[in-house]
Length: 269
Length: 282
Image (cartoon, rainbow over all chains, first blue to last red):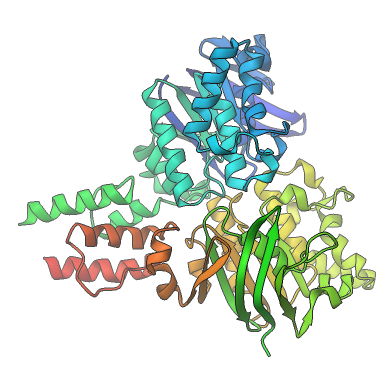
C-alpha cells in the first residue's frame, strides 16, 4: 500500500528532514511511526497524502506516485487526521464537518447520510451532530476529525498522534475502530509517542532519528533491538518491561502478559 | 493559611455545570496530580486555579477561590502572571504570536514584568538550557515540531519564576525521552514551587506527585495518597491505571496475585512485588 524508495524531503536546502528513506507497508497493516520530536514523523504523513512532495526519491501509495498526483485526487483513497483537531475543524456543526469529505467525493445524498451517520455512531458522536465542534471536549473534537476521515471510507488512514489526550474509555473506542478498519482491509499509518499503545495496536513499526529511517520491521522485532530504542529516544512498552521482570516472552499488552504468566505457571506445575 | 483555598466552587457554562461544589486547599510546595476523564472539568479547574477565570463574562455561580488569601480578581495582572503560570494542552495556542525566535518568546513574559534586560537575558538563557532548547533558540516557534513547541511553552512559563505552576496534560505532545525530561525537570523544581498536574492518566504524575485527586462530572470525588486514589473504585472505573497496576489487577482476576499484596503503581514497585510473587509461586 505504501512504498518509499530513497525518499528525501527538506523544507529548505539547509534543513533536511528526511533522507534516503526506503520502506514498504503491506495493505491491511497497522503501522506506527516513532521517533523524537522533530524526527520527521508528521512530515512523512504529509508526504503520504501528497500535501508535500518528495524533494528526491519516490513514494507510492496504492501504486500511485505522489509526485504525479494531488492531495485532492489522493483523498479518494487517503484520509488524514492531523495532530491538532482545532487546526483542522472549520464547520459550525459536527454533522457538517463530517459531511464535508463525502461531499467533495461526490457521494449521493443517501450514501453521504449513511456514511456520516455510521461514522458518528462509531465515534460516539450521534447525540452531538448539531453541536459546534469547538464546543466539544478536546477528546470529542478529536473523534470529530476521526469521523470525518472514516466517512470518506479511505483505503489508507493517516493518524497523527491519535491517542493524544484521550481517557481510558476513549482510547478503548479508538482501539476498537482501528481493529475494525484493519479487519475491513484498511491500511493505517499513525505516529505515536505512547509505546504501550503502539505495542497493543501496531503490526509494523518505523523508527526515525536524525533524519533517517533507523529501522522498519515487525513491532516485536523492533522492540527487541534495545540499542536502537535507546538511540531513537524511545522506551520499551511497560508490558514488555514487566514481562522481562517475570522472565516471560515480550508481551504486547497487560492481557498478553497475564496469558504468558498463566502458561508459564501451568508448565512449571 | 494554605496557598490556594477553594470553597464550594461551582461554575456553569452554557447551562451546564462544569465545576460542582469543589472544596480543597493546596499547601505551598505541594505536588498535586488531578486526574479525570475527558470532560470531567480538569481544564476549567486549571483555568480557575490560574486566575484565567473568573473573567468579565464568566463568574462562579457559588463559592470562591483565593490565592494567598485574596481572590484572583483582586490581583493586578502583572502580579498574577508572576505568581501563577498555566501550561495548557495546545502549545500553538499559547505562543504569543509576536516573537520570531524561541529566545524572544521565552523572554516575552519576564520582559513584560519590566525586569532589567540583563536579568531577563540571564533567566532566558537558564530556562532554555533547562528545557534543552538552546540549540533551537534562534528558530521561529511556529516552525518547531509539536513537542518542541510544548517545551518552548513550558520554558516560557518557568521564565516567569511562578510560585504556582499548573500543567494541563503537558506531555501529550512529547516523545518518551522529552517527557521523562519534563518529569525530571518538575521533580527538581525548587521545593517552594507548588505544582498542579492535570491528566487523564496517572502514568507520568506517579513519578513525582504525592497527592492525587479524582474529578468526576465536575466534582472532586477522591483526594489522598497515590495508593488511596488510584486504587479507589471510582478511579478504577474512570482512569487508566499505570501498566504495572493494571497487570497486577489482571493477575488478581486470574487468581495469581496474592490477597492483600498492594498493586504496584510504578515499575520500581513492580520489580520488587513481581519478584516476591514469582518467588512465592516457585
